[in-house]
Image 1 (tube, rainbow, N blue to C red):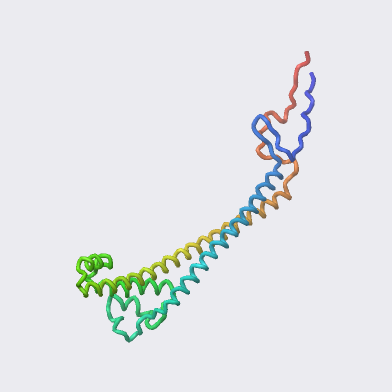
Image 2: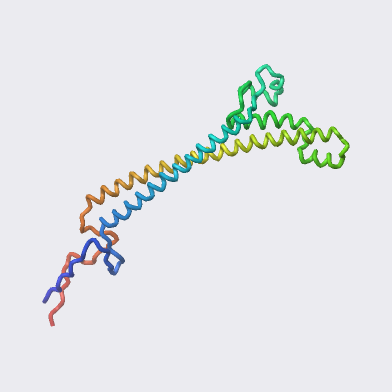
Amino acid sequence: MERRPPPASVDPSKPERTRGGTKMSRRKFDLVMSSVGVMLTVVLVIGGGLAFWGYSFANTRVHEQLAAQKIFFPPASSEALADPAIGPYLNKYAGEQLVNRAQAEAYADHFIAVHLNGVADGKTYAEVSTLARANPDDEALAGQVQTLFRGETLRGMLLNAFAFWKLGQIALIGAIAFWILAGIMFALTILGFWHLRRVSPGEQIFAPAMENSSKPELVAAR
């Protein structure tokens, strides 16, 4: 009876091909994964910063553009707020300058829109303009066209400001999500480097189980 010679030693830092696949040093695996974690953390932090910049830009621009229009709500004593379709929505802003998205939405939908509905029995600028072209001598229609054009233009501008602000809020939510993910990834990366320092240099990963590893193979001598 004779024993087979033991297998040659293998460098644990290099992947090794086996019948079951590829073996890799656990230390090398931890280093690779932790390095990827560092890169992902940096990308998420930068992404969050860009998203927050988008939020800040949208918020600032909306405020600046609305303030430049110098639109003021009717004072509290004004008859313009007595209308039940207007008062409940605008009373809290009475006498104030229109400078933010909530005010823009309220003024567009509950002040301008209400007055526009009364100009031509609810007809839009496009409808009245068509009638005016068919009746060029009708001065009443011509006046309604001008009023509706100006009112709908201002209303559209205010609603666009509101929509732009909304996009800024979505960007803020995105920034927070990016930074939360960056924090989680950073914690996982620290754990990866911590494990890298503690793992045995000879430990392998993805290594297949060796059958009968505890019993030496014997061959009969002929």
